[in-house]
Length: 273
Image (cartoon, rainbow, N blue to C red; front, side, top):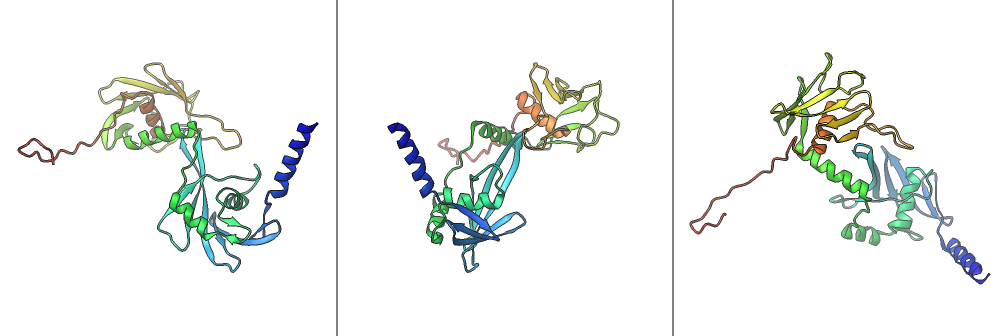
């Protein structure tokens, strides 16, 4: 009984001290007290003091990193000092909260840049000074690692199905449809798989149109199409470029990153400048 009473009073104390954040007609209130104003234009939320002086902006970003992995965060910029923009995680009071409510809730609860006195300029400047790191889960971190490798390869596909990396031919597609376009998405289900070879005509793997799977010569399999719960499908119909990129990740020997080596002058002592 004593333990239950302690838990009950702990929860009650939390509820009594928790600040209620509300937004109505662009006015942010804490426990019924007006503390700031907010406006929205092109999905950028501008936070103002009660005299409607713009102080900072919050922009929501939701992007695909690679495959079905997405990353959502906010970008904050000060109106009075636009030299720097910072990227931060945000929190929402519920799964059904809109961006405006989530922005205000994050500013109050997580970032502490809005309090009962209004917009806290000192805390806002401190936030930009320290720039806290985002807390990415392992899945998102791995996705960014893959994305970084893909970007370095700079893969393109030309109008005849040739695969290039940083402008250099590294492979090609075969069994292409008559209506092939390098920027097309592959929507047709055919009984003939689209195959990939490297620049030396070594078989690398294939894309199976009926299952939306890539299969390497070494037996690795990857499904490009994945249904995401609560979101639209990502990469339902892949491009030829996306297939080449994923094949490069599955088979590291297909396309190797060309590292730039800068050779300087060598002195008589054998020291490179």
